View: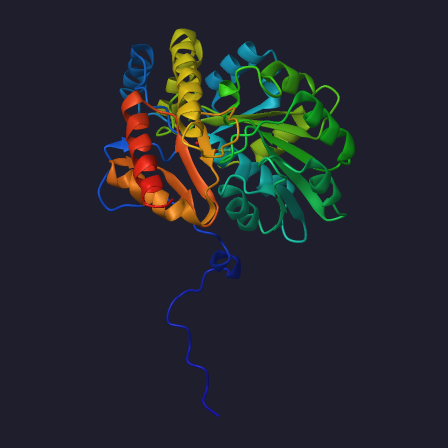
Length: 363
Ligand code: PMP
């Protein structure tokens, strides 16, 4: 019998082949406007740019080990102990460190689907099994089904509010209700990447932080990529019980948060005027954009985030193409819908022209 030929190059772990690909906006030419990645459309403020410049001039030096100045600033701002906060290179990195510390082979992680597309990637990378619970009517988390999906193997449940890509929010009562139903040894991760945009709908910052007192399994995940407009620099954090936070810190690569990102995040946190202007612009734009889309007969849920969800099903790809033809990138999810970031008035007008062309073509 022929001997198997020896492998000619190293083979990756099997789980690598199981990882979904993080999608990116379609099109080959850079769009004139970007409405595909839920970024802020406003440039950084002068104060943030000055902090970036000062940090860049010292970049021959290592940053602090764990983002200490940012952790201190967050601790003062949020009214929680520094020991409860872990900062890192975007909330994605912090979530990955959390999953590394608390999940792995033989464990399961429950989340809603459709929700943030990075969840199955990070869960499988950690070696755990992803358990996807379909959304309920209204594009909302099916909390009863999610609680029902918890087994002896469940290590974590991830809640996304506002949910990416549907924009739906969990109310304070809903967050309290699911915490009451999840066993205390299972992590409940509340991903609040878009919290600042909720504008009174859903669980507030203070309400969710207060829940940490009674629920030592709750982990709150936040980012500087959205309302604070620093997506390109990568800064995010979690807030949790000190013992949970300590485990995540222990599972984190040293120097994970770079010095420029950290300085920018500290400055953005202090620049409350810039944050307020950004939020006001997005909330106002969201209201008029939603009304303009609804007036065209499109069904779309109310959004608590800086994006809108158009559940057009099989029309997703053609709607994305129609928007691209008008110079604006949007994010389509095959067979499900299109997510559009609330942006400048020019970007909004381009999306509406794309939608009109798409509707005229039969949708
Ligand atoms: N969570 C959700 C729900 C998101 O939409 C995103 C970004 N698209 C993230 C987390 C990751 O954000 P970051 O840039 O902080 O890694």
